Image (tube, rainbow, N blue to C red; front, side):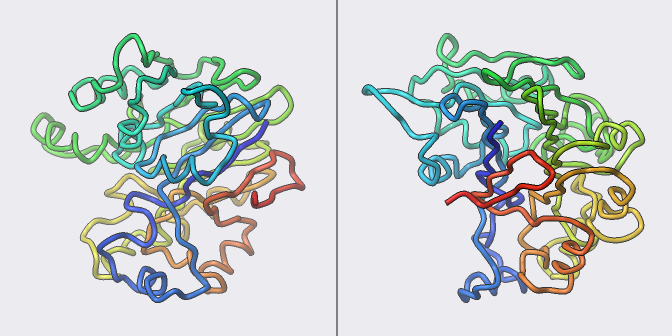
Length: 314
């Protein structure tokens, strides 16, 4: 099983187009300690010829341009991309679908709730019926994601997409940021030898989630913020990580503490927000995460799901 991190940043990418927080400022200044990142997505294949995408970032075209294995290989029209699986309906996970509208068949896989969010927005009708197969998949049920790779999606505490919040507030008076259901899911991948989990958004660790994670060969996990009030401290936002449906990395309730007792071969942070100081090589936060056994994901990282091997693809 081959897994390629196409993008590793949270919504907006890194640096964010309009941001001069301390971390983004380093990127705009060309500081070599920070690397630019596109929004989070993953490519998966068993044979290197037929691929599935997990989430479809707005930068999907540049991501395809950066990975020859995803580029057209033959004929006038061709793509190695056989399917796209969505973990939620957030803009940074679905907007790239609009760039895959050129009459190219592929399967679009998601829960019924996520499909419902797309169907409610007519702009996604450019993915024409009869060309793109919209296939609902259920929770906790194994299915073939791409030839040779089995997937199973599972509920993860999170929230509905930002652009759908107004409806929930009108109906319920507030947004549930630890909702468990079909709105936010993780993905378990297996080729019969290795087991890898992809969880780019998670509001809290539950006993059920910890039990599923334990023993995995690799886990790519939500690394949005280092501390809950990070965006407020940076002066670029008013929301906490918890309000956005994301665990912080640090602290007693953070993901590093939650993973401390779990037997995981590789632990890789993805979906890293532009304000997160772990993006700075050599920073105290980066060193603390690495000391806890974490890898800071970056675009182009090839994850070989063995407990001793991980490399960056050339």
